[in-house]
Image (cartoon, rainbow, N blue to C red; front, side):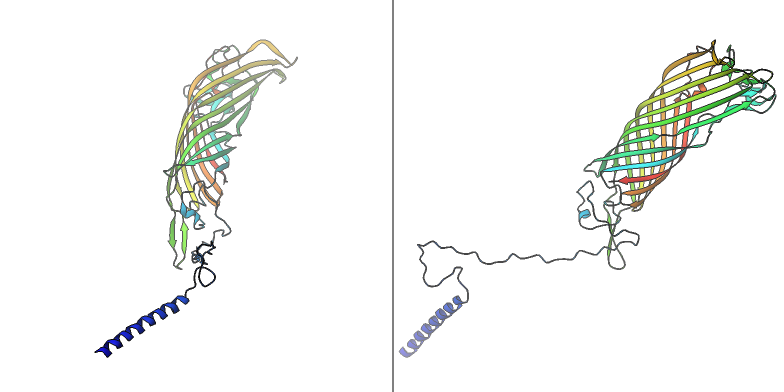
Length: 442
């Protein structure tokens, strides 16, 4: 029994000694966090170096490949759009997304050439004829006793006339509803509609003024042997608008059959709302010349009738536009409506010159200047298509209608009665035609 107890005691002692030796050996496998060996003087200050632990590096992940269409310029680089809320715009480099192709930039301009047809009267306006008229002012003149010659102004002559339109816009901000707010200035004009005509009597001095305005006038161009008239009309427009434009929704990612992703803009409708002010300048001039000759055909008297009419209309306007947008093209319809206060002025003069002395005949003729105020209503409608050639360049082409009511027109002011203070302000003008140009964004 004693032997057994002694053996157990020796076994337990051996196990404790083995555990102690194993602990010492294991401790030697882990270096101490300081240099040196042996005992440490805890009273001495010493520097303990930081452990040499390297910062882990995140694995590098190659970006996904984006397959572009064959007609896409792969040299394009991403440029931030006015907003920075669309995080996806900063991750992939799309070729036809709403962030890189459609209406990007802080400034934009539209430069257009416009060919418009002008219509200003319901029918041709006849001013003079050779011989006595056949018909009456009530039913219209159907002919003349001597010939079919007449001095008249056509309702749409001379046809199309070229003009120019320029728009400069500035992006202001984008609100939380994904609506762009812009300010833009538009100038239209530069063209002048002009027409002229002449008539010569075949039976001597038999020309008669057919306009009813000369009835009862002491002096007119009745009895002239020849006459010539030049009619010019100029239209210019200036407008400043504040425009709010909705935008397309987020772009979509398409998985191609090859397993590659392509990012494209969503097709859809956007809307523009605008409000602003507009100024319209409609200025017209008429120069009517008549020659009076003797029986031998020698010039005796030369008559000159000049009329100038100006419409200065200014007032508010509002508009609405709807656009169908796709990655490469946009179709927009726009309507505008304005009520303008029109300051209408007209000036006319009639003078006769003695051909023998080349001096103006005193006491014959007149000079008048009249003015009135009226409200002019402006209505405009257009359909424009744009093809996006580059992210910041688009080609545009469209059709436009422009209608003005209650304006003063120079032919309606012709009146041989001196001192007549009335101003005709019930004229209507209708313009329509084609336009083409380039849009720029930067």
